[in-house]
Image (cartoon, rainbow, N blue to C red):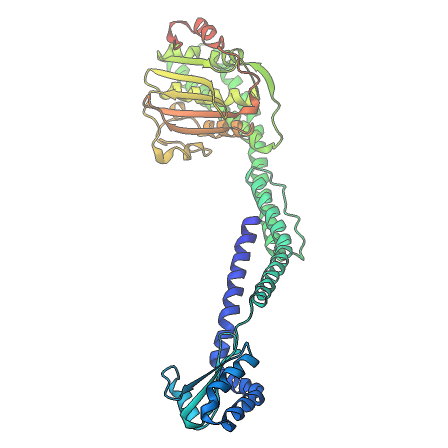
Length: 459
C-alpha cells in the first residue's frame, strides 16, 4: 500500500504544483487588460496625488522632490525617466504619449510597476516591493499544509480500496494453491464490489468444474478396480490349466494389459487423492538412512535386470529429518524409477543440506529432456514421446504426482540438465523440516550391502 500511496501522492503533488503555477499565469496572460485596469483603479488616488505633486512643482525641484517622496512612501520606490526609455514596450510608450497611466503585472497578477506620464516627456516609475520573507514562508507553509491535507485524504480514500484489493489478491493466491472454496467476501458496496462478485462467480464455476472432474475421475477409477480384479483373477485361473503355446502367449499378453490398466487406475486414484485434499500432510521424525533404505530397496531387481548402477551420496545430509514419508517416498520412487528406465549405465541419488533446506538430487546419464519440454513433463498425462508404448513411456502421471507430493510439504521439484548428460531432478524441502545436522548417514553403506556389486557409494 505504501508504494502506491507514495506514487499517487507524488502525482497529486506534481499536478497541484503545476496547476498552482501555470493556472494563475495563464489567467493573468488571458485577462491581462482587465487585471491592469483593476490595478490602476485601485491605485488611481495615490498615483494622482504623486502626479499632481510633480506637476505643481518646478522642474528644477523634481530631483529633491523625488528623494523626499522616496523617503516618505518607502518601501515604494520612485524613479524618473524619459518616455523614450528602451525599457518601455511599444504599447507602454504609445499609452504614455497619450497621457495614460500604465501598470505592469507580476506572475501572480499583482502590480509590480506603475508608469505615470509627466510633462516634458518624463515618466515616473513607481516600483512596488516584493513580498517579505516571512510572507513568502507563510505562503509555502500554506502549500505544505494543503499537501499534508491531500495526503491524509488520499490515505483514507486509498485504504479501503487497498484492503479490498489485498483481500482479492490473497483469495486469488489461495485459489492458485488449490483452496477452491476460498472467496473474497468483499462488500457489494465496495468500489470493486462488481469485480469481486465476478471473481467469486468465476471461482465458484471453477470449483464446481474441478470438483465434478475429480469426482468423476475418482468414481470411474473406483468402479474400474472391481471388474479389473475379477478379470485378472479369471485370467489367472485360466493359466492354471494346460493350454496350447499360442493360447498361453495371448493369455499372458492379456494379463499384462489388465495389469497395465490396473496400474493406470492406481495412478489416477493417487493423482485424485493428492489434489482432493488441502490439509497439511502428517510429518514424522525419521532416520534418513532407514527411510532411503525402504525407498530404494524396491529397485534392486530392476538394477539386476538392466545391469545399471544406482549411486547414493549422503555424506552432507542430516541423520534425521522431519517429512511426510508416504508423499516423499512416492516422489522419490517415481524419479528414481524414471532415471533407471532411461539411463545408459548409472543413476546418482545425492542428499545434502543446503541453506534453504534438504536437497535431494536424482540424476542420470541418459539423453535428458529438451529445455522446451522441462516444464511440460510435469503436466498430467503429458509424455515426451507419444509413440512409445506404456511399458517404456508410462502414463504421464508420475512426474505430476511427484511435484504435487513435494509441494504439499511446502517444497519444490525442479528439472534441469545434469552435468552427467541426462536429466537432473531436484527436490528441495524447507529448512524447518530438518531435525538436526549430524552426519554422515549410514544409508550408503547399508544400501551397498543390500544391493550387491552394482551399487557404488562415492568416497
